[in-house]
Image (cartoon, rainbow, N blue to C red; front, side, top):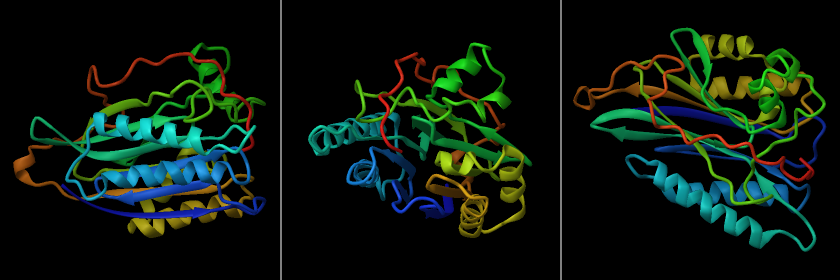
Length: 270
């Protein structure tokens, strides 16, 4: 399996500091959204992508690899926190994995940064936000549309460094020959609806141009947060890999960690 990709990030029109960070190098593509303000959030995000970089240049990655990286990030973030300060980061991404000789996407996340798949003209959110509003949606207390404007929409329930050691959720998904993956921070999804993201991913062929246009559009609309996006395309699937086309939303049984309902992460500057 071969991929091509593009990435973009912007601090946004209202932020002086970019607390987002990204890592994009096969077989791993990751975004991190730091929390804690100046001298904290950007440090936590940078640590996250530095540790992700340790998996660069491998042919594939596995959930165990990501799990070890998350542990290292957690230890370093706690050790680097300024005295009396709390800092942390989200961590979301997609890696190229092999399972029984076939190519798969390994999707993982902690926090409210997201991973999507665009295939067959449809955009499917693979990751599930670790947030207060997502818990309310899951319980049927509010409708998904209400979550977009809920006063607690920025309160997340899981992050690296801000509480007990965070565990990622994982999904293992068969790779389709025309898959396009999107990994992004919430600065993008706060401004662009799913249909708008799908329209852009479906109309801009070059992944670098697609990532840049997604970020530029969110900034143009006045995003009050940093904005980061990585777009990954499948170039070729070798016949010997026996990969079968993926179906949006298809999740292999038993490949997702059980979701918990942890207490909200302590409030820190984002």
